[in-house]
Image (cartoon, rainbow, N blue to C red; front, side, top):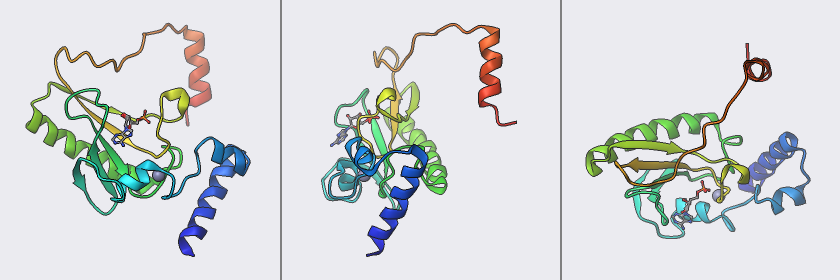
Length: 168
Ligand code: AMP
Ligand code: ZN
């Protein structure tokens, strides 16, 4: 079936980019289908959710363990494990949708600020391995701990990093 062929192509791409065996990918939750991924099920309506927006590409629903009042998740209906796999066109659509919904939520909830958060990989705090973008309304003194400890970096390290990362 076409869906399976698509899936095989996708798996091939992931294997090429990560160098993992099929078994390793499955174990790490990088390969999932509609059958065993909770966000596939929710996004496609198989499991009920508190949906605040839906179109042909995405479902947006309220997080069950919210960081703040109104915390929601933009979830594509097609399975992509993370940002590295996400289709370019969907990435553009997701950020435009985030902008629209942030404006709407700011009006509706009267929040004082807004965080867009997007985790990739367990090391980055990702727990559900189906791409999602967190919409987190912020309120003065809401106590939500979305922060890091500011570190230090030397000018040599900065130069090295520019060498390593810059595209030009
Ligand atoms: P992350 O840590 O970036 O992978 O975020 C996963 C988010 O999904 C967390 O904020 C969870 O609270 C949320 N979550 C997990 N299961 C559900 C669910 N069934 N419905 C709504 N939100 C969920
Ligand atoms: Zn999924």
